[in-house]
Length: 538
Image: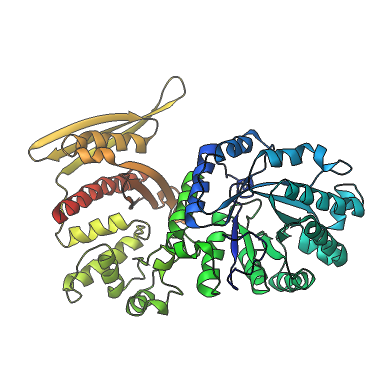
């Protein structure tokens, strides 16, 4: 691959990608990666085709120090690993600066350093002179280059600094260029710049530094992180920094999972990761999983709702001509079309949803009209099937007499008591009939839903051992009609997995135990239905 400095061999529309999820992304609230997780993310980013992976700030914490130690064993096939840090301290010889030494000790092929661009930061934060700041930038870059490192220079607060004193901001870039930096990255550190500002200032920088690669590092404080990054590329920038899923401090960094497909699909830019664009959704969810976060369903391109159609007119039109309501083919980014069934649904929506779930329906069947009426009645009573495909499929197959559970749950009871120690204990009893055998099972847990889950499992697992594979991954409770107080309808959504597939089920009632029971019942029933369908195929 090319270095960051623009080369004659580069395609004229090449844009390099620089991922800072493992450094800047971890500064986001609730984001934390173990060393092992950081190593796995780095490998995944390399496989995807990202050009630069910023691993962290050596010496800032034990975790980053350990990461760089272990990262030496990574066999990256494409990406270059970068260590991040600052210029030397004021009035300190660069060879004696401990932080610069740690950057070299990380033994990465690339070092990214940031320096002050905004004169206010120079005089009031660093408490040094404008001349010393320029020397700090040039000395540090030159020293690192002399040690065989490729140096990317991040001009911190560039856009604010330029608006405050344009000539000095440009002088800081000139100092980095003199030192040998291969890329001058313009940072919108406060995240408040507008699209036109970033575009115009990037043009101004390119006029002053026509031979150097210009990068963009933007934040999302004004909700424009992606937009200003793309504007910078339109103006001539050829390196984009960002994080996967927009992780980062405050409102996050510019989101690479949105920037990358926009550059490739919408703007016709050449990216080394462009050939792997169909793996983007998988990559996004992989990183969310390691960060222990639920994927953002509203995320452009990679979110579960990105290509979801709820209104009957939309669903029907999208089925006939996909691009009528989908701006790109979902498969391009590894996503897929989803049809959401609700009280807004029409016959076409139900047909499409059934097809999506692998069911073959006769559009002329009068039972389809009855089923649609049933769905709308259930929605009116508080059920919602948008995130509960499994419950919808079970409902439809039961309605069409294509599925009946091979057991009968004849009754259940849940009690909660407060023990003398002050702790609470829940006990659930379940009565299940399988064939001619009736089983009574009792289970305890800290809470009523856990106790009911355990009791149902005990009652079913003897005859249906596949139930043991089912694991609850999420439990969500929502009050549907808040104006009715304690008598309000409660909707429970349960997410389950067997390690191969994840599915959602729903229950609704004015009793939270009943709603939970319905969602749990469907979770187990769907596992058996799914296994039955697989057995028939084989």
